[in-house]
Image 1: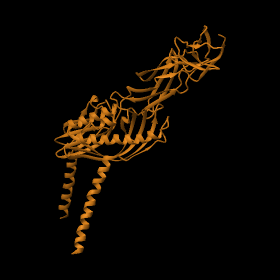
Image 2 (image 1 turned 120 degrees about the vertical axis):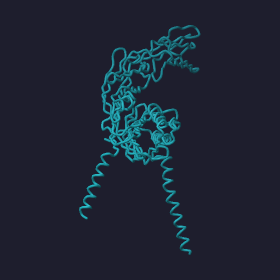
Image 3 (image 1 turned 90 degrees about the vertical axis):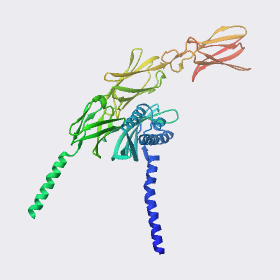
Length: 175
Length: 288
């Protein structure tokens, strides 16, 4: 009898863990993309320590904002971290998603980023990002497309009032 | 019995082949370019909904399967990775494809600084980001021409962009004035103005211009930099008078090219002049 109780209890614990782990993974994935940036090849200006930290923080925030905006069809989160062409593009994308009745869920599996250009005056930085991304397109609540791909992005971040903002973001076939 | 099995197998294979031939199929373009028309192949029967999802744009169309869908050039604005999703009869199928940016038509030109002293090595930088007419970033190598000229003379340099960026670093010219800094690709060009101003004063000299019983007035010769450009009015010039009883200092602004100061008359004093880190001549003044 006691053995049966222990067995039931153990099964319950296993069930709880099996449910909690993916949930936790999803929450963590949604909240903070895993971004590693290599600044060794940036030039012509050397990237300052404080700038390195700011770029990692703000590029990560930009992806988080994009993920939230596309998942909720709400462009408000974009305005904190995007500017210029990139802001225009993603605001339009959200508008088009609303019109088409779809949403996009991005499950971010991490970014390997190289800083490849840092302007002489320290106002703009170019990044090359190899991102592992799972994209799900939902029509209502139904997933109508899902794919996982490694996508190469080129990005330009420019310094704004209190942070770096994503000004240009474009995906490109890997060379 | 064997014949029956063989017949059943052949029937199944034929059925599968016919079914496969009639199945909905999505064919995406292989070499799409933003701003140019594309065709999406849609085979099968019946109706469906096609979503084309680009980074900055979504196109949704109700489609009749069996006919290819034509997308006009002006509709296809966003470059990068696209996903085509065909929804038909409760099922969906999808494929990813790439759209290349068009040819460069817009330049985003960062020129720094807006004001610079003459004759400074590597003081001016220009960075160009290339975009097509829909503001897609053109990452293909593209030659960019930079020219920097002031009062008819200057430098021109061609740089090939790398990953969508072209930049140069250059020195300011020897002559002051509004330098025209131009970046161009094909017929597209962007102009920035960089004000080149005189550098630090050079050969700073002063003389006593007026002397009375109680005061002396000292003034500089026209203040110029080492290449002969007039140092701008408003630049501070410091006159210092040292004598046994103490020191008097007057900060005077250059006005019409000359700085002037009034100092107390002294029996025996040494007057010096300086501007920025340039020291001028010294004068011994004495005798009331």
